[in-house]
Amino acid sequence: MRRSLIPLILVRPCVMVRKFVIAIGVLLIMGGQLAFGQDQYMFNHYIANQGLLNPAYNGTRDVISGLLIHRSQWIGFEGAPMNQALNVHGAIEDTDVGIGLSIVNDKIGFSNTLDLFAAGSYKIRLDGDDKFLSFGLQAGFSSWVNDGTKAVTGERDPSFDGKESKLNFNFGFGSYFYADNYFAGFSIPKFFSNQFDIGTEGYKNQIDFKNMHMYLYGGYIFDWYPVKVKPTLLVKQVYGAPMQFDASVNVLLADKVWVGLSYRTISEAVLLLEYIINRQFTVRYSFDYSFSPINQYAKAGSHEIGLQFDFSFNKRPGMRSIRYF
Image (tube, rainbow, N blue to C red; front, side):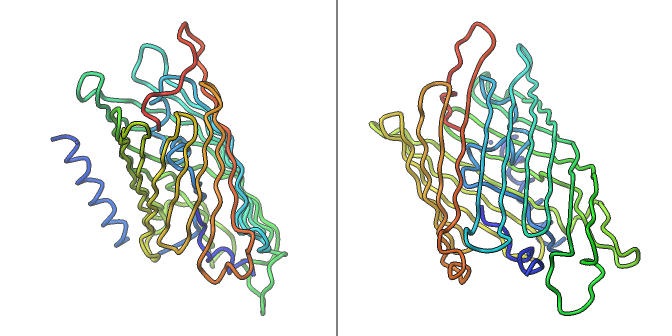
């Protein structure tokens, strides 16, 4: 997904299910009342990349699943975001516990963050083996490097005086409800953020309710033979910024190729492509086109490519979940 323009300016910066949904709504409203800070990385194929977005998703598939992604945003715009990510997760056999590991490299301008998170989840069976509610936590460390000497400023600014690096702790929370043909999730991937402290003229890692990014999303699979149609919606809330919506529709053709379109309220359209090579491997590609003024400087758009792999180390062969998410 698109990154906020602010960092670039700085650089030159279900009864139970019903209650669950209501609680999510309250949290989003509270989040809207809680100041906008740095943006967090997101990817176009967020439904396929839920292990990065929501720790509760880890272990909800029937296999050991992994994702490898590269994203180059706003090509042609100097200092534009660039991301690489790896997420591997699976369920502990004969339990309702899932585990996962995520590594994300996030570069924007003269700031670079490398995240390493371990995640754990526990799922509750709501209706036999038909509906599940999963809760997850993730925790880990972020290596953060900020080279302020590369910034162009009109006058002396202590936040850009030199190069600074930190190793920071962080954690996140998520919940995830799913069945065979629909799903919904809510997450706060990071509670801590780096804030510049005027008194010490340095950055501090602290919990800041004003800077928490909250995500609410869901989707449904319509089986309209000979195709399957998957509409999805993601809502992102950060105080001080307009609530963002990402609506997409993907169509599965011949059980092999997903073709989709997405539109974001930040004036971006996205082409989504996915090819299922076999039961173990899937490749994905997306192209963003911006209708905002930034298109004058990033005419080549944004590109994202990813590889998913699914394996099983028990007697079952590796196979794709019939949930298609």
